Length: 318
Image (tube, rainbow, N blue to C red; front, side, top):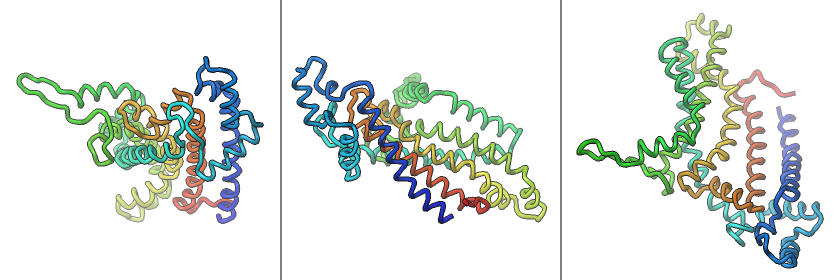
């Protein structure tokens, strides 16, 4: 196990360098010139060349890459060229990232435990009306696009409705941000976590059904162990193994999923910043977000592999 961890940790910086090299190459040789986007198509060609030289875009590719990586390691990801001209990219992300982290945390906090609990319940009540209702909810939650739920919730929850002489609502705010403990977070966190809830309910149910038919579960029952001990200590623990991978990639994918939610609810998070940067082709901001997302995926993948050995002692890495 120790040798495996050492090899993975040694391979981690190599993998990050390869990812950063490919990402930087796509930014340099991809469609759209950052200087032209910043200056406009009608700008004087001499001025464009002068600005390109000022930002170092006229240098050889490897020189540009080495300078960028050297600065990025020190926390300097360049400056916004378009939407937030002249502002440091690192400062922009650092200001917005805590909002996205709080939103994702609340989404996971309610959806992940509930999804696992519903999955276990559906597996234990397999074939009953309880299982049928839970599976119907899962299908609805996965198949119904999140963007389709937003107008429904906006009409049903966030607007005033007149019922005879009564006027009800609005119950929840539909936009803005006032912190993790304000009511503004309820709707976006609910929408962002709904897909997580459906996915984990389905996967937990499938894993629990497979585990509950295993021989060691029958042996545990034959020993006279209490039902809750068999479910929690033996069945659920082994069912968590395939869920660990899912948990890791859901955590990494939440950052991308918050793009639409933050933009729709006018939440000033990192997802909204990335979305705005993509539309405006803000070169350095896009590059910083791409590297950050790739780094998150690589690190989470390493943590998943390490967690396997602690959850299931049968797993050993040679």
